[in-house]
Image (cartoon, rainbow, N blue to C red):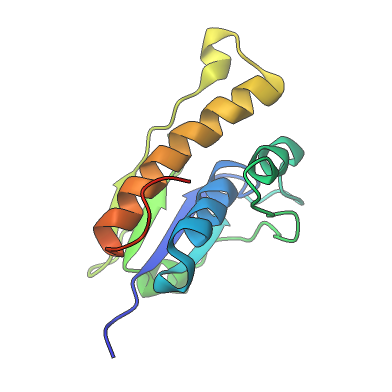
Length: 142
């Protein structure tokens, strides 16, 4: 049986960007990829606007709970993707690391649901490219 790739998305609170990325990858890759997300300082709930914008695509992340990243999570992942400039992780041999410096519309004065849709779309494009790389045969569009 071929190895099933595993991806861990990490941001600070694990309530927004990392949860969105995980939800999008689950939707695109299905069971072809093991997907997890965590935070370095997790909040108490998934960001409501993040959940709403994914809901617009038919993806439900409202049942997800932010969790603290552990060394074991990072060690067991094939690929760890950080989605924040503030994330600092210990890197373990054998695990690949990538940083996605995602769009931050608030720096251009765009806030609220409009901001979150732009963030979602940026992450969705990156997730589609990732899925094509690690799970060939998955669709490139959401």
